[in-house]
Amino acid sequence: MRYHIHTLDNGLRIALAPMRDAKAATVVVMSGTGSRYENKSENGLAHFLEHMFFKGTTKRPGARIISEELDAVGSVYNAFTSKERTAYYAKVDSRHLDTALDVISDIFLNSTLPQKEITKERGAIIQEIDMYEDMPMRTIDNVFDALIFGADHPLGRTILGPKENIRAFSRKDFASYFTRNYTPANTVVCIAGEFAEKDVLAKIEREFGNLTPTPAPACASFVGAQTGPRLAIKHKKTDQTQLMLGVPAYPYEHKDEYALAVLSTILGGGMSSRLFLEVREKRGLAYSVHAWAEKYPDTGYFVVQAGVEHGNLEKTVGTILAEFRKIKRADVEKTELAKAKAYIQGTRTLALETSDAIAENMATSLINIGRVRTLDEIIKGIDAVTAADVQRVACDILRSEKLNLAVIGPHRESDQLHTLLKT
Image (cartoon, one colour):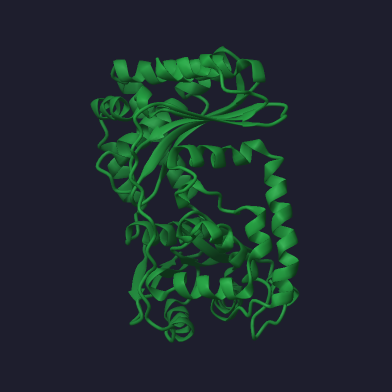
């Protein structure tokens, strides 16, 4: 992938990745802020503000005007808020990149945050919260995050926030959060696809170059102090029990980051992974079971998620823990190691084929580690992982005193679950 990085005098970074003969182009504007940058009374504000950016600007005074302009060129557009990133994007036929760049730049720089739209959007966000509450598969991570990070730490709180906060936010709150957190120093503009690089760069410099230089905002660091297994059960009447079982792990750019990626793939990446074969194929305990590593600049975790019949909760947890113990006891065989590496390299290659994936990868990488992590770098890192590395990392993180089990379903705490986690 060929790309160029430009840094404006105010600190804003621009990443451009021309793709010869591409028929599409994507613009992403991302700031390194999210729910981690909120205090308790602000929780939910970052996500609410993201919604408000689409409600009108001085040039486009209304949500309908914004959406109609992008719809008129067949654009795929949206925004998202995570714990540490908020992004606004539009993917278009490359002939319409000027429109996409103009609209996304406008909503980012010139949103008016009309009070009447804030009042209306409260209801929409509360309905969004209710929608996800009816989808335990999508909210089990909230229970897990509160367990592993603690409900008093921003990483342990939800992105959407509590309803009482949503009802209380004022226009002043939005303006204050925006000024504090949306700064040139923590913002990147990324474009990938077919475009005239010189013209696009000049437009971005014109639009974003006048932003006042402001330092990037700070957030609360996380230092874990877990000394024993932990269990959190959200009692809820459901048709299926959702569980997440995980342990603290590594941040971005940790020396064992790639070894952890291989470990998580061997255990729960794809339909030939150990957990898929044991939990689903051999025992029929779950339809879906998978594992992954979640990373932040200063912390991270490894986790397994599954949805099971209520009566099979303990059996499933026991099966997962048995696989944890097995991978700590013996080296991974050469064929399994090679398959895991090829799986990661293949899926990453496919994931970075399109302009939107490339633009988002550049933006995320710049926000999280301050540079663009290329596919070649990832492949090289994965290639270097040995079977001994995988076993060493497994022994390092898969310890009973570090286990965290989050559950949503019609369950209460039980001695059996506590005993399983301690063995």
